[in-house]
Every structure is written in C-alpha cells, then in structure tokens.
Length: 386
Image (cartoon, rainbow, N blue to C red; front, top):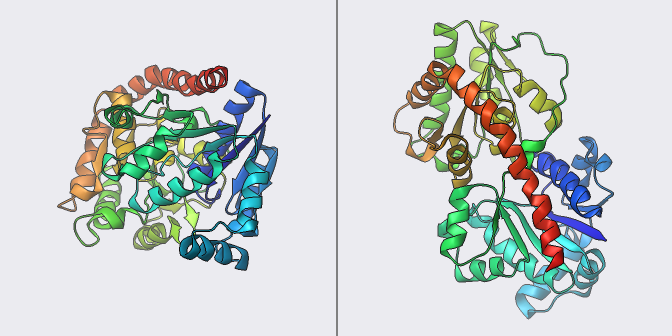
C-alpha cells in the first residue's frame, strides 16, 4: 500500500514540516503504509530532515511552474481544455491505486488556494484508490458550489477544530473532528542562545501575512513595537523573536529583522536562527510566554503548556483556541479588528495576569488534545473498511 501526501509547499514553512512529520507517523501507525511526499521544494525537505521521515520525496517538472513542461500543460488545459500527456502520465504514475492525502489544511482558509485545490483533487481522484483531506480548517465564505462539490468527493475529511467542523456540517459535508496532528510533534532541545533566559523569555513570532489583514496601515507592526517596549520597561523578561516560515516570498524574518533593529541595542531582545520544526518547538517550550501569528508556532507553545496569545487572522486560530479554552476571547487577537497600537499589549497583560491558571489548564487539556489527534488513525482504518 502507498500513501501520497500532496499540497505540500515545502518545509521552509515549518508548520508544513510539522504536519508532514506527524502525519507520516500517524499513517504508518494506522496503515503500515509507505509514505510518499509530493513536494514543491524537495530541497527544503531534505535540508530540514523530512527525507528521514517519509519513504520517498517526489518532484516533477510536469508541475514545476517555471518549467516548459508545466507551461505547456497549463495552456493546453486552459485554452484547449486538454490535459497534457506529460501531466496525465505523472498523475497516473504517482497516484495510481494510492491513498492520496491532501495535507494542505489551509486550502479553504484563503481565497487564492481553493480553486487550485479543486482542480488538483479532480485529477487525482481519477487514479487514486482513496482521497483524504487532512487536518483542515474551512472558512464559510470560500465555500462556493464548486468547493462544496469537491469536499463531498473526499472519502475522508478530518477537521482540526470545532468552528470549521460546524461549517462543514452546515453544508452537509461529512467529517471527523480531530486535533491538529502537530500537537503530537516531538520537541528537540538545542543549547539556548545568549540572552535567552529559560522560563523568563517571551517568544514572539510575527508574520508578514498580518499586513494583508490589518485594518490600518502598519497598525499590527506598531502593536508589536509597543508590546516589546512594554516588556522591556515593565518586566525583567527578555524577548526572543522566532521565525516559523522562511520562504522568500512569505518570510517571517523580514518583519522580525525590522522589529529587532529597533531593540537590538537594549541587549534584551534576540532573534532566533532558522532551524527545523522540532528544534523550534524546543526553544518555544522554554519560553515563559509566547505571542505568535503562525498557527503551528502557537501549537508548539500550546502543546508544551506555554501561555500563548495568538495574533489571528482566520478561523483556524479562533477554532483551536475555543477548543482549548472554551472561548477565543482573550486568547486570540484578530489582526483585522485592530484599531489602536496598544491592543496587543493589553491582551498580553491578560495572559501574564492569568499565567499560572493558563499553564495549569493547558497541562490538563493537552493530553486530551494529543489523544484527539490520534483519532485520525482510527478514521483512516475505518475509511478502508467501508
């Protein structure tokens, strides 16, 4: 039996890396299957060690968007409504008789990704044995008739939080509610860099994506500036700026560098070098508190019982927080609702005021979330028995 993971953009997004690592293990436990990763950037997967987790990493010029083969296939499909022979042969070879698992859980969280997923799923279903949509979140506003039809074509959908589960239910789409597989990610602890005070450092992650959602020009970045100023002026804690996505076109290190440049002379703000997702989780686990924009950076914090504030911009952050705490209020600050530059600081004050209770609560619920993530194993087994 062969399982093919697709919709993986590369491990330069360490959330994607975390999903591959944990999903591959779940599949091997449940199905005893070889796991093949279809990756847009295999060099990233090799760099961060994902090649040691899966049985094979596959890339092809047929779907390399810079290649002549892809351009030929694209224009034949778009203009002539014909699939290029190279494209057909690739899809048939890779996915024939496989369990095809779409691990792009965010495919229907953003407007630009839904259409791409629909077209690819249609091609894959022509040759695969079973088609799975894995650990997803769903924004209702992007559920066009085409997308609803596509979702109803999956043999199994696992959804990682309750808000998206309700969206699917409202559209008559069957799914199994689990928890994000990354709750199961093992951490790896490296030596702490100079200036990182164990259990007295605030980890801060900032994403360039927040600029796409904020309501005022640079208001989110100004909130981060005010937050760091508050921490330095009112506490004895240090700050560590932590990137979780390092793709050239979507790089956390860009806003991190801008933030670091303002505070580097204080001697209390450091920036973390890039490393793989397990190592990043090791650093995050030794923070006293964490503020993050990237979902899987915050999951690394949640799952190691670090009090966490999410700078959120989609249903996934609200849904995960609601499932953890019973509410997303005080735990998620929607960037699109920001009106002043003090809101992040005020939200952080709440987290620190309730620090011990939050740690205690996470300590009690995280084991349940890990068990919920493992429900995906049973869902895979049940799917094959149908």
